[in-house]
Image (cartoon, rainbow, N blue to C red; front, side, top):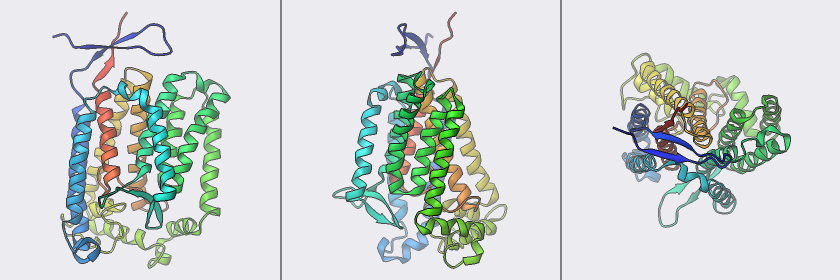
Length: 387
């Protein structure tokens, strides 16, 4: 049976290129995402039900987070499956619009944002008790904008002028996200400059820009607000101030240590009531405690498979735009997962980053599953080799 064809015309080429549509999406990637989300729903409930049942802010409802997270998971499932069946090329003309909308939303945080945990990241949704996080939208906007620029101006990174423009576009949105939170700004920066690194023919220029960026982030840590420097000190010796700056790290390490090989069992966490943000940023520690080294290793294996399949999709993508979008999505999920696990295990200083597909957080979950849907759609297409 002949497979249906699509024809894509590169705007920088006078001759259209024909591709063959692959009959099905990458189901390995699909099931990896679904398994991670299902684990997330279970573990968010397991990590939160004790705290939720004892605090009035959650109406003393043990199922408070389960209902909200389950609803978001269903929404994310619908979005992922819908996006997986929409031809990725339709997003290309909207990349600039999404970038501008994201900038506007990030500016709105200055005026309408609500603060929680010392960070102003959320905008309330009128008429509901839900909030959304513009920095998550910024991740998607950065991916599509950088991919559009690379595909539209294929030789733009061959000279200093083009390189500076690329860095300026990336730096603008990264700088605005930094206001919402250092960790979110770091992730958007890595996504943007990671994509520039992949596309740039002059690696030394990237390293020059990278050194400038590292110096900038170091300046924020050492000369900015004092709590960031205190986190670095707590990272070096969390037990020196175990009741204050090192408290979260110490409690998460206790959780990991008590998990052993097979864990305490789901719902039997001893540390969930003590670890701050147990259902959110530090959920990997609860996974290690309840499911043990085997369960924690399974989570890392699943993320490893996601990265492997994502890289393969990027390498076999039919055009520059889809390849760069795939690269950006892999950067976004992989880097965020690595940072989260590194924080929980005290491999790097503490910073608030959710574990993709697993941590509690509606905007993060829906955006991550939507991006996975885009990656699944790209996987349906491959280059036709002609003589």
